[in-house]
Length: 175
Image (cartoon, rainbow, N blue to C red; front, side, top):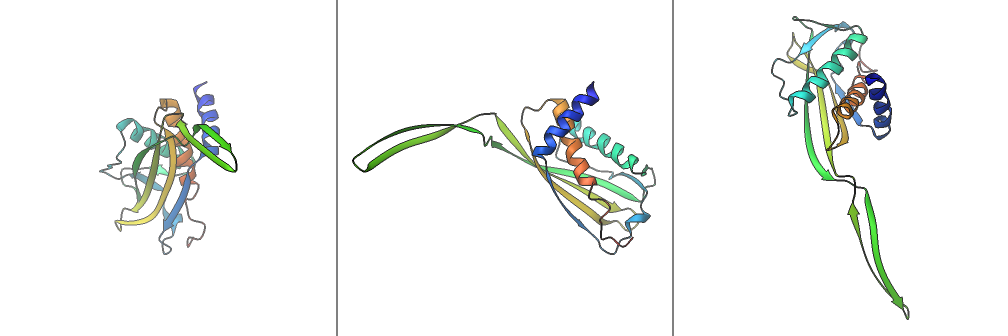
């Protein structure tokens, strides 16, 4: 049941989804990478619960693609986020108007509904361990409600990480 609710939330969130931009080293043969682990000192800017959600989701998705989590990896995965809070863009409009004799006067305003929104930019880096070089980077811009439940956060991160990893390996890499 939990998986079903996460799936439904994921589908809902995909429609609101994040946009992903990718950059990579064109000289790298990405087909040689098959093992990974996380950068030793991840400082994501997120809380520990969100870090664990992202790690579990990334583990699952990379392992589905045949990657092996190793103590001697070929690539390090690093991630970090920048967040800002803004008011919801959804409003209820109220207006008062009057007019007569070719003159019109009106006053209107909007009352925000739905609470605050967290604008998040999640960056995921793949670092070649041997060369200690950044070889691939994806930046996802998305937004979530400030009052998301743990299940909604998990569904949000599942959607974002899926979109990020859908861009790996790059289509134009030298494979």
